[in-house]
Length: 585
Image 1 (cartoon, rainbow, N blue to C red):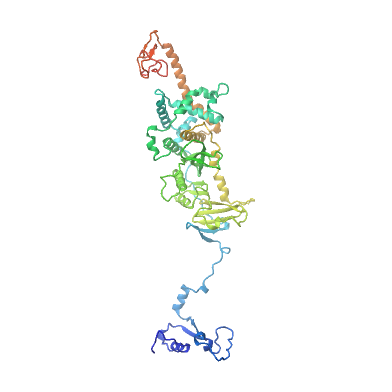
Image 2 (tube, helix red, strand yellow):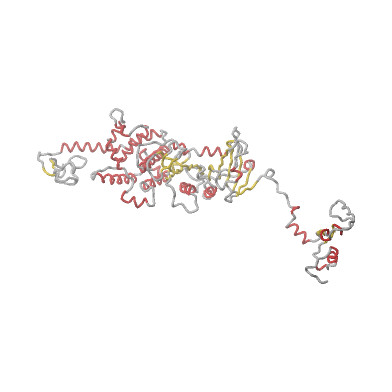
């Protein structure tokens, strides 16, 4: 039969063509034809109800509008190939129903950054029997510190060593000789200067520094240690680097004025003590209003202005293990890495790979940091801000929560705890150290993650309360040096107690340390006084007045005294500290 694409066939003609179709053109399925409308046979209606036959009319409806053919294809149950296809791709009506979140223990949710979280229940954790990461380090002073710490002064010199003191002495003398060519200072005199600062800090002296030398109300120990004018001269010329090369170093280091001294101090802190299992990373604001490019204002701190430091503190002893000053944007930070993550990795680098736990606040905590530390056998516990992209949307919701309720999420080895402290306020904690979650039996029903965070996060807050203001200054390197001395005194106190078994307070330790620091300077002053008296006795004067024969620092001054060694006439400018010993001898 000829076929034309544009020919329209009636329903009966189409039925005849399909019935005459050979078996080779069929797919083997049974075809059932049912007619609707005027061509439907008896008992075959378009619905389950009987369809009434319409009464005859003069104008019957158009055949195109009433011709409806419904083709029903019934699958052959004996066909193996069709059965296998049904198993692989079942129809929608035969697919299994996925139960809701209320009936299943787990619910998966994807955060904005792509992190996949699984909502869990508390019962899923209490039944787990997993072992926590073991701490393989040894907390306490290192062998380097134990060999040297035999006194308070030696514990202090473990942190502020003689090399640092000699560098400060040389830079200070260099600055002093810009104004006075004959200005000089010894290392022991610098130690006495530090002792004066410690005495003022330990005794909590208020008021101006000059009042400590008052005739009626001054401090006798300070007056015996150093004259007031000498202290003012040292404070005026105090420097920590070579001023001639500073301009070149400032281009790449904003901290160049005291950078070398600070790095040596931090290195000594790391070498002298091994922290315990728990370390706290936090920010410290040293109170100061000096003018510097990185001065910070923090409204939540008691002293709102100051220089900010990021510190790592041992939980048990409050030992400052590592410290980094905040100088603004860090050019050494790798591209794509957040500043907070880079800071934590730098602080914890000497203490990783030993199973320690680091606790931090919401500024530092992130999921990527937790996974990065976990690769170095270091677990994390920290508060987490709800605005971070890795936090799931369900955890960000604050309304509609029951008071003191706990919601848990897991992503790999990380556990996110959402605790409702108020009806419309929640606290998010991220942890990789907890394998069990237990709800407290108290009224507020705190989970153990919140309790552990409150216990492990207190070290830096307690450390801030021990700060002392040594003296007023308008130069930021001196303010940083004050903070260095305070950290050194705290760490030296920890070393001294651990190595000697002493139980004295920090205040008494600082006072005793100040006394040992000024001992050598006092001995030098005693020797110089004895030498002066001896020279006075040995000094010869024949009453003759002539020009100075040494001429080191003068221009033909007149003199009546001779050097006790070379017998040359020596004026007062060309003699040494001890009277009438010329500069050449």
